[in-house]
Length: 306
Image (tube, rainbow, N blue to C red; front, side, top):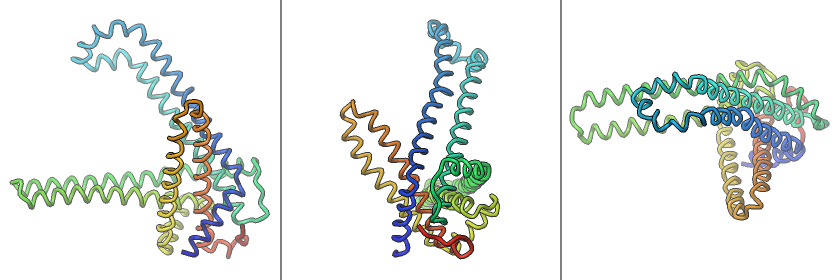
């Protein structure tokens, strides 16, 4: 526990040392909000204006649409295509934006953690973001595909097992109800375990990839070896999750109390965005400090010191 307390202390020191990242993260959130209204909001307004001419006849159209839904798709194919395209563009833009900012953030934190002489600069942030962008996108995609594949595989296995149980047991006996409940509970528990394991592996993989500067596959292998050799990393991650939830619970309690006053609502939103940004930077700082210490990074690189 002494090691964990030391990592927490130094992690917050690292986050405070690079507090500029909080403002960058806040700016990214604001840009994302603006892009939401531009990329999705404007097409919605255009669609509403276009449909305004048809709404007067909606009462007459409804019976025919219910009988033949394909007519709706046929008549408004262009509108549906516009909305789907806008949604996909928004997801692509916001995903790349967040990953780009994450690459810069992790790169700056890593440089600051392993080099006491490092001083934050926007040029170094953009340089790290550019270097890490493609590798982070590849890593996140692979981890997500792996988690989805495991989830689908277990769902299929669970479905087959439930089908076999129902086929073998012809009556609703206590035995059948027990096995059916057990199969359902197993699926739920396994799903939670898979999601948690995917989050742990994915988050540590991001840290390993940026800290060690290796490729996607190599970083995943290093992450597996690190977690295998350092099982307490799971405990550290769990502590961070509990702390993150507790901090949000306290903050949201204060936010609800203050939001009663309408004048404070915009101010509360800004404070909430800054607070969430700081929490995110602090969590990444803690993880980087923990990995640098537990992986003996300083033994083969620049001496670690905050």
